[in-house]
Length: 58
Image 1 (tube, rainbow, N blue to C red):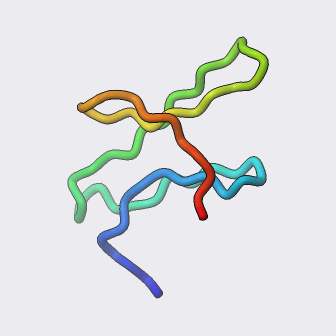
Image 2 (image 1 turned 90 degrees about the horizontal axis):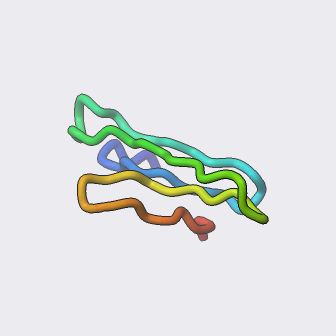
């Protein structure tokens, strides 16, 4: 299925992060923040409402 309205960041659980979407259609720019220097790096989706940790996509 090809959903042209989908616009999001997702993680496949195997070290791959995907930034998907069409900014011209959805009026949304996907931005990812990487926080390094801890035991493990942390990955966040950045939005106007705040930063949200990206978890595995099922």
